[in-house]
Length: 354
Figure 1 (cartoon, one colour):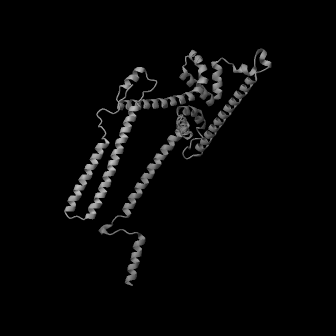
Figure 2: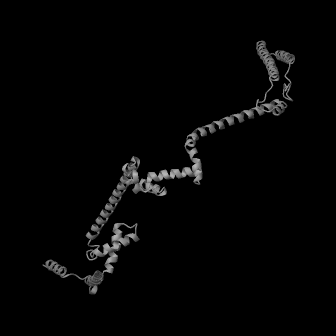
Figure 3: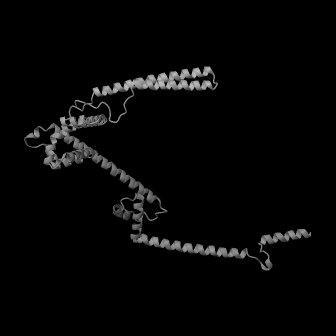
């Protein structure tokens, strides 16, 4: 790395000040020759002078800018040569030597990629640090339990799932959880409530509190079940009263009430999703058909209704036949009249003759 390339290979050399001045003088000379030719053609002398002055000013400005550009490029090239690019300090000596042998363009690309990699590594390190900070509180509590869980056949993930499942169980069904916990660990809740041996005279306050809590939970559960059963019985009673009151639809309910009460539980068990009204209807139909006296009444009633319908049909047919004869046409195509109509017509004719 004792020497660095001062310019890229193949780059065009910057023009010197002499070249720039020479080009400027040629431009001025060409401008004067062009102005003389235009003046010989009869153009206005004042316009030619103004255009010449403007062209001269533009040419002078271009010459100055070219000179400044040349000086700046030369200074930058000299500065680049004086300040060679250096590889990162953590690189090995072999990598640094290879870096020194690269062109300036290749060195720029390598250093840019190196900066991108470092920026990416910094961002990922920050993310990992954030994850670590969030995980540290869990590790403080779960770490000491790793060995105990491993002895029970649980890894960290399975053990945590088991612990959360027990927590959900305790929150959802406290009495059930206490009974399960006592069975798993061989604890007799009866002994806890009465005490035992020498410690019976001085019960543990914690066990007493636990016993009271369990008793309260059991009492609440019993009350809830009693209320639910009472509401169910009340609903059934209301449905039975409404069913029995509908004597038009259930005329034989009083005859088979006892039979319905006997078979209703079995029908309810076979049809758990049916409503109370539907269950009563099924029990009513089954009881009335199984009860022989009631079945005889039903068959007799059906026969009576059948005969009544037949009589009504015959009566309607006879009435229809009489209507046809009364309203039919008489001999000669005249329409038959009633006695009142005939007498009224004869009276009208007699009045007309008088």
